[in-house]
Length: 141
Image (cartoon, rainbow, N blue to C red; front, side, top):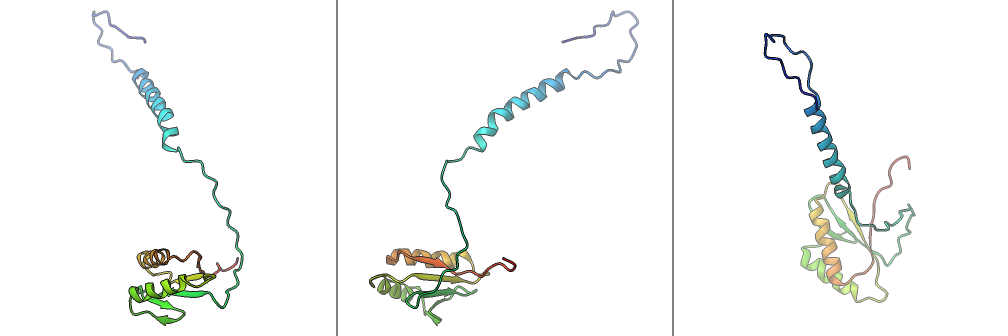
């Protein structure tokens, strides 16, 4: 580190040079902090993610379609269910059938996720093992 100490005798000159040493010190400290914290911030659990493929699934006649409209109403094969308790009773009856039919969920794109989440919870609670989601294909695909 260099330091300019005047002689004290008539040194009225203005020093026009910028001392960059503090700036370099701060930048080095920040660089070290970033190098230490970045690997911690991007650390993830190593998992093998499933591969998705777009296969058209043929609907079987025994499959049951449950639709959720924009207001959160449930429809069992196009028949409106009065409440969630009735829907759960139908799901429990369906879970007893061997082999279990697949439940296909059709949710309106504007429906709150809460309504679909409750439906999935009821399906799981009833003991149904096969659940699928019906979507519209993207135009141009």
